[in-house]
Image: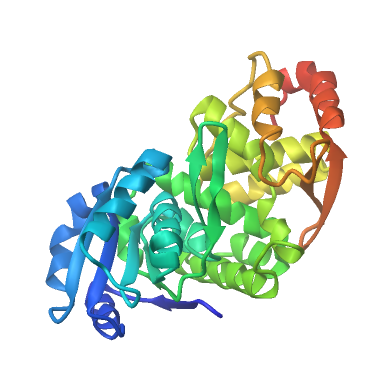
Length: 341
């Protein structure tokens, strides 16, 4: 199955929803998005379908077991049927949460996504990875459940706070290392619309070739293993944490030549991530390892796979002993404390 990725506006979104072959629409919308865009969404909703609206908590706050159970029971109480159709409207956290609901309700409902953040437009809404967080780590509970459609309305970007915009730009930079054409796009005078389309198409291409992450899709984890830990430790937006996760990978594993490229992509996109969050502080080896050892990409009790860049457009996934990663961080912590680039 292939996800249809399509540019929309609020009016054409209403037409797309109206064309879905169901009499029940289950709408899962981020509460902040609803607060800003309720008028546009209500004015354009299909009039011939029963709509059940569930408003999530904002962002990652909704991705927990208690909220997941609450969402399940909300829809089940409505007496939904197997041909009910779920639509997620929100950022990556909302689509993660809603997609997991769709995968679980009545053993699986069809669903689609309306991404409302830059990060979700270029990455999180595409690919069918759904799930919630555990107290032990990010996205450890979930399922692969591919959405039928991703309807991109770029007007949502206009209301994004800076941290959300930066988060999307950080994830876009990742694609610059994975694809030569996107790398060229990022360093040319292309519009954000062109960048969004290029990244979304690349993500869909990779997912089509490797849905369950046994090959090429592993490349999308570039920067994420350390990034997820940094996100938690320093309370960073996801894409910004991925940016610093890539910086750590390049610094630690013979990729220092890519640090200049990392900053050049940042500059070209008009982002400014500043200095590393650990600069002039004790580098948090112990805390990082607490998250790394629970990473879902762990290959065994002893090994973890990291994505390394060989050159722009080429990557390799390498398995390291977890003890060796810890030793590497311990040996480098004094240098990392003052590391900037």
